[in-house]
Length: 321
Image 1 (cartoon, helix red, strand yellow):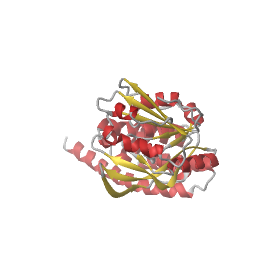
Image 2: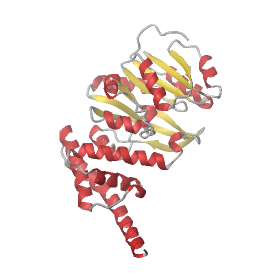
Image 3: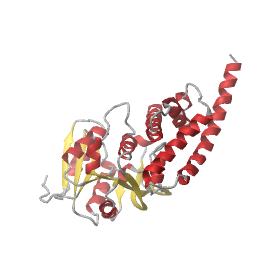
Image 4: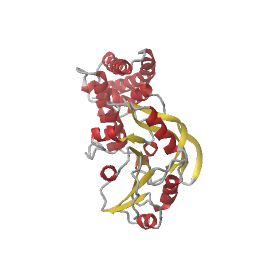
């Protein structure tokens, strides 16, 4: 492995586990960036295929490659963070592709917006090797993203660039098995309490859907963790005195996770919690409350329909004994 003699501004973090099929394309997309003042940290996390051999066959002084016994994604990312030398950390997945100007545009954005701690991009979607017409076009403005984080993850993980100073304050990715995956949603939620966040409104990443992708293996434990993180975000945003059970109910209804709801609080309590969260987010950002209140009203219409169906279903169950 050749050492990169000059300290890079950007460290690209690329964990690998049995990713030989698409790994070369992923790495080459980083090496071909218009912004070249970077290092690429590739950590093979106990692969049983030819991933590490493929990495070792590449000769570019910006590549720093490592091999380890399997530790899982969050621990591997934290190791990459500890090894990194850059001011900014960029994520890259083993089967995704960064378009040529991605790093350049993200560095420019963070340099111009010192209050911003992380920035993602839009991403086109491939299904294995086939192009699709689908695109991840998440919101771009901080205030809207802060609202979306109350319930969901409005970022493409492999498109993210993160300011080192903010990430170090948060201690990196959680390795608590009860909180990851989704390790990305969990981390963005914590970071967004400290800083502004953004997405660049341009397709700069190609996100590949593969049958073995963890994000496509829908499971009850994953859903439960999403609901837990969402409820925490709602409670934090709503402020002191917020009802944790109401927050869990609100998060569970938003995701259709009815099994997480023990008792149904009144709809007024649910609405008040969300509106308090929205108003606090708006006040911290110094923007008019109406913007997020409109988004909250749209979200509550869906939640209240699910609330009504669940209430009817439980009433029937009680009548039937």
